[in-house]
Amino acid sequence: MGSKLLPVVDGVSYLVHPQSLLKVVEPTGSELIPVILLPIVDSILSVEDPLQLINRFADVDDVYSPSFAHTALIRSSTDKGFIEVLGKFEASGHFSAVYCVSPNSSQGYLPPDPYFLCDDGVHQAYRLYEDPLDSFIFGVIPDDVLNPKRYTALNLFSPSGLWENIAVPSRLYASRTSKTPLAGAHMGIKDIFRLEGT
Image (cartoon, rainbow, N blue to C red; front, top):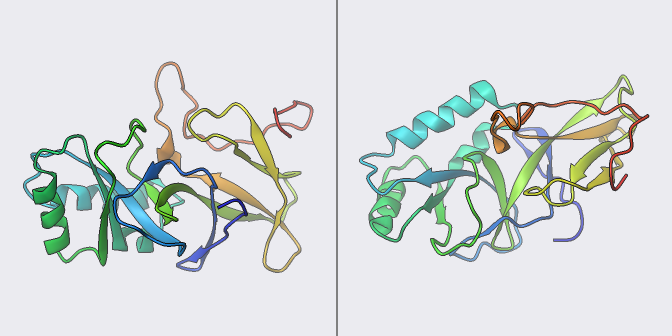
């Protein structure tokens, strides 16, 4: 998936980051599938707790769109009880499809949030916003979303071709801590500063 993929979900334009973060167990093909990643504990009694988490996304995340919740991507910390949890999700009737991440996946924790499935991989979703005020020279995305030290400039234009599109990641991809107090914040960098890779 080397080229930029720009799907439209619920009338909203997105950019799919080319970096695959996880592999799914089932083959997904090359079609883009919007999904919600849900880390699941083995002691889950019902699907209601994950559904409450999904409902919270609409309140706090501008990247989330309701169509992401049609497909669940579940990830369990262990193999124990995983089949039972998978069965509960499939039987709930809340999802049109349920995929699972291999429990042996080497990737560490990824936050629950909207992603795209493509070519059996999980990719971050970036919402595209038009910049009709020309506030930005260009948007950027990190080359490596797990270790963002170098960035790629994007030259994406709105469907009309008049305005630059700015790619915005989900606020939930990053958690604020005392070491990362600006995690999840959306901001611009003045053009007098050099951002590596641009």
